[in-house]
Length: 248
Image 1: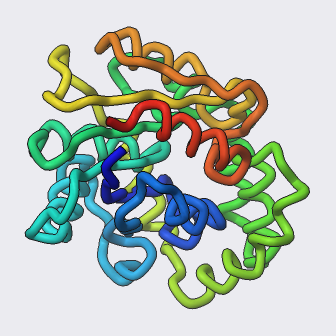
Image 2: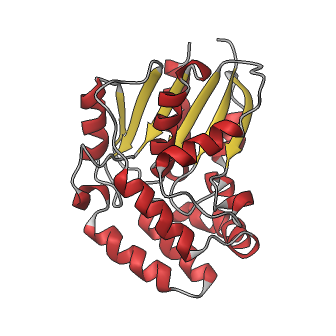
């Protein structure tokens, strides 16, 4: 198996640090060349920028920040909002990527709004936005996206530090939500290999959203039975196994 370079794209109000220990584990795999986490405009290292109101603009931003020269085949690994952007990147530049993996994402023309953001998650999100204590806010986010509380303590300090040093504004969170809420996919699949990953215990995005995307484009789908929305936190080794089984 020849090594590939991975480009990682996080979701709503998240940045590179929120991959947690998954980034280290991915770097240790025999099929891994380089691992490049990409931050969205308005988040992470680009937190001072204004987040675009469309998925297309987010995709153009990330494409413009990719290295010009490809050392190895490129693979995108993405989650939620990041997966919408990954699909748009594949649409705009399919020749750049060997494979794209999308996790727990949803599309406005395939799934109803109450599945794209489940009611319980909507209530939690309102509480999170209103929460002023940074550490408590990060705990509440983990409760919403993860089903594995035993790992939260190992993540919290880094997450809190990121929130203090690179705070994403409420305005940018809302702009990301608008972009996500409007995004649709066409009937024609981008001309590169796409794999769908989802988790049955996702309390944020209903698993049927991933199933409908897979059916829409006749894509392979891989389902974890117990992980929450953030599969990279809850089942990192499972993701690595899926990659090992499907990379050329």
